[in-house]
Length: 442
Image: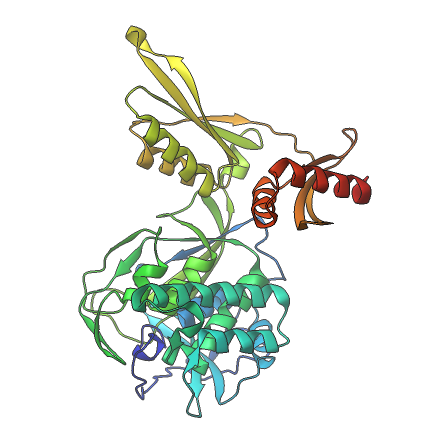
């Protein structure tokens, strides 16, 4: 299915011949193997949550699609049975799965194929949500799948100006795309790593869609990839499908040409199409963040002195830093050379997000350089609970640990919303929340 028309929203379903250059294996089998010329090369399965605290980097010089993502993760070491068990619990039928080996430029990669046996109905976003909710798949996998379909629905909604639940997924609502999305969700949840994706190539030309021709990159693909780096792929070809874009949008933390990490395991996923100028491969790399081994301290403070930035620009930069993962961001007045008034823009980052936030600071401000200061941070254990009040349930942050009595802080935005709904002062809601929290927590 890699880069095929039937994985495209609103695209006509065509009958495609699938070349299987090597013998097939069913996804529910316990072995994980490549097959080439009758010789089997075994790869050990990764344990559950093997990627916890690590980076999963999707290196996509030929783009990506849902089936290519699954194939690369299986090749990496996610057991096919972990994906198959989840798919078998979906209340859908009319398909079977095959894994095979495909050789691209000497690289023997895994190819994941969904063979559709029966005609499939067109499904709305609301109908797909019901399918997911009616299944017995694990809750974390269901949540990931919901997020992916939500991204896809938001992209379609923006293009067609329809309410989310009324968005029709034509071929993307068919069984093969549901399998791709839920299968990818299962594989990513099994691995448990933080996903980073390379800048993605965008194709040219047109694709046949249900309501006529659409320009490439497809409108829904572009909507899904808001905030991610893209570039001209140089071919009349659909490098990134809407399904692949939605999986990235719902799971990737950021775009990066290559993250600072120590590679540990590599997997290859093959697309179906043959490309003239590059192998149609997706590389999945699991590695340990390099910063965790080389930086001193537990966190990083990023700083830049600015004497030519307006207040509006600073405000926007602080907001962007916070939304992109900074634990805190602030501006401090200073005086620079020749007595010029200026500010120091600073952000507190984890080691894993420091590189990405440095890029944000360079992109969003007028600075030509960013300082990186390693710091150590002692954190008070915290949790969030909901307390019941006469104004409704309000979330409360509770700081605990061996540092004296618990610190209780109501979520202020939730208190403001409750105050508006009930026509009372915010301080009245805060008082009610604190009283309820003290009664139930201390």
